[in-house]
Every structure is written in structure tokens, then in C-alpha cells.
Image (cartoon, rainbow, N blue to C red; front, side):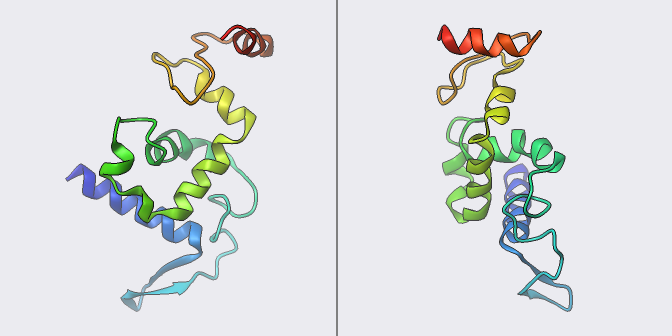
Length: 131
């Protein structure tokens, strides 16, 4: 049940980022969306917003396989290329990488470290210089 709901949400996100939505007059038909906010590369258009920052920790890390072991395989995330591309764009940003280090209780092998407490920008520099 939860898997199907997660896949449904990923499908909606994929459609939004690709610029397609379900035609309300014919549910089986996709059409280009007229909204200036659809079609990415970010959730609200051409610039990253707070929406991206709020959604990345769950959807981005989920499709990248960074939340639950084999979740990327289990959820067949290769079916969502626009979501995968968005997640990759997000994790390439230095601020997102730093945000993923803060208050983590366990390590992520794809990121340089864990910062249990953050008191200033220099905390990141200290962590990154002493892996």
C-alpha cells in the first residue's frame, strides 16, 4: 500500500518536472501543461526554491537510494528520469551537500561526513579537512 502511494507521488512529480499533466477531460491522456512552473528543471520552474529544499530530503534521497537500502531498485526509479535528474541537480549544490551532513545520525557513503552540531560555517571546513 505505501509502495504504491510512493510510486503514485513519484509519477506526479515526474509528470510535473517533464511539463506534462493528465488531461482533466480525459484521464488517460497526457498534455503539455500551460503553467510556467511546470517543466523544471526545478519544482517551481527555472530557479531552485524552498519547495525544492523541502522535497529533496525525501524524494531526492529516496530515488538516489540514500534513504532505504535498495529503495531505488524496489521502486523502479529508472521510470522517473526527470525526478532523477532533479535529484542529481540538487545534490550537486554545495549548500544541499552541507545540509545533508547536518544532524545526521548515520553516515552516507556518497557524502564526505557527518556534522552532528553546527555552530558556524567553519564547522563544515573543519569536517571536510579531517575526513
